[in-house]
Image (cartoon, rainbow, N blue to C red; front, top):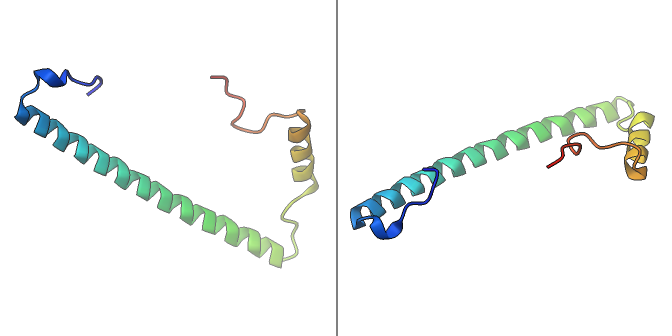
Length: 87
């Protein structure tokens, strides 16, 4: 459904059917959202574990290049990834 229907033109049964369909759509979207949040949580936990391992092995978690990139972003010399899109 791309546009919202003329509610006055719908019968009671059509309204009930539309409500049921939209409720099912919302439940599917909600399920997908919960699945995505779960995947994001798993990925973040993996990243934290990798960073913790690097730190324990004596590797630098933040490099000089990271600090320079942040300095460039803050000074306006660089655009952070993903922020270059013009709307």
